[in-house]
Image (cartoon, rainbow, N blue to C red; front, side):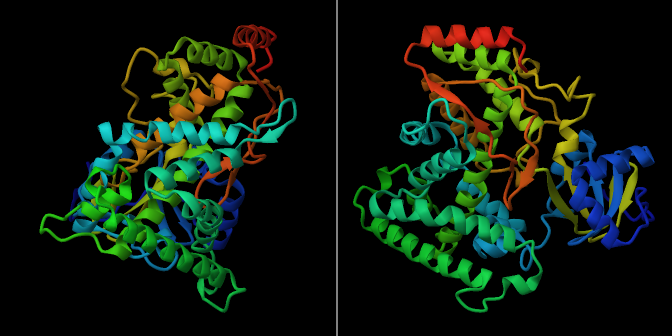
Length: 459
């Protein structure tokens, strides 16, 4: 892991071109820019100069990424919250706005609802949301799967996390996704865009939606506190109301509200995007699709889990994660000064040939027969900042894939893969993960059709 040091600063190589030119290149190339710099300088650690990441260091080496994730918070921190950070949209009580002991204590309270029996109690909710959504899917007509996946995941989180039902659930279904997307986009815009200049200004629209969101959550909190069976409820809102820090203090209502928005904002769009990428990949790999459908019919799940992991490796919805040095540290061959932003390129780590032979190939079999994944597999980040809902997201993906493939046959395509498009929170398929499906009235014939399509070689 990284260590504190008094050695002279030793920065990795990087271009000397002005920030504006590097920014333009990054906007055009994204993480491919980092890969190109790595090849140019013969290093898997390079220096860049980008907005909000002045003289940042980019890491694509999985070993150094692991070292970074296991380094203590006395040396590294998430970049400070406030203007220009996602915490500004979610609020001061969001995990994204907390650091140090506060961050650690909050994660300790958030962890129990997303593990073990607690989490398994949400399975039926996820399946119900999937069945509800796919009931109206058109047959034989191309449509986008991303938006349906967003509706499934937002419904599942609103019910499992918020405990919302009835009119409040319907209102939140309609208003929250657009609010989250708008807020996430605005925090990376110039500061002028985050000034409330009235109800028609972008930030004014966001804050109007946020105030209504806060009011609905306040009603849900009041209803939960009045529920005589509160201690028997499984939703995360009920669990957070009963949670206590080590000193016996509860989480404030406003912090609970901020945290619920964080779980929704950081959870539903990332999982939905990953599911959309799964359908985009499966349509272009009919052999994988056929084998996966056969496993669903047989009641298995091992290959489905491998497919989920490989989708997350080849199409990570979060391209990178960032840390900031709190003091001078040695990381590998380099000595970084205090205040250095370190970008871990998840995308480039997932392209590591050393960890993933033939990394450009979509091959779920690389995970079969083992529950262990290479260190380089980091779609949820790592260390104290690893996504607290990673297990929930995996379970949700598993149930939705199982449910959809049980009900529908997907028609493979020889169209080129969809380009990645960033929409504020996650990187999504540029065309919405378009698909053509037929309802599986006869599963046996559906399997034969899928096998025939696989044999035709349309990859």
